[in-house]
Length: 215
Image (tube, rainbow, N blue to C red):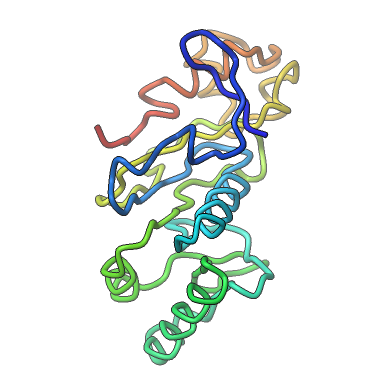
């Protein structure tokens, strides 16, 4: 069940896609930025697209944990270059069989990074929704982006700024990546507790959740 606010009322829905409505664009490129919950958000979106009979591809412009699922298409970066056609066929097979494919270049410690630009250009031409993890937060529920973050592709149509509600009532310095910068934006001390209002401010701030967003 998804809970959301609309017209100052708390509502419920069975589908995340029915709430966020990215279908105003034929084939959206949705970027998840922020902190705790980005991968889970993209996983939910991919599953919903698959249940609707649509196809979706999940990828990253930074680093994300490698999925151990049948629809995971992860290979060494050199393989994407030398065996790109074979791997692209594998991605197509996953889309046909499972309705989703998670693609990436294998990085260190169970992580995957972005695929080469030529592969991305090929995938973009397929006209399917692309779900992109475009930020990292070191597994913490709150974050303020760094100078070069988030890594949003120019084709991005929607940005979901994600935060973990387990940050509530915790010390900012314990649960926020770049807590000193967050304290500065919020007008608080790093040892202060996080409130609902703090999360909203970070999500809406031009140097927080709205940094680099398309119009």
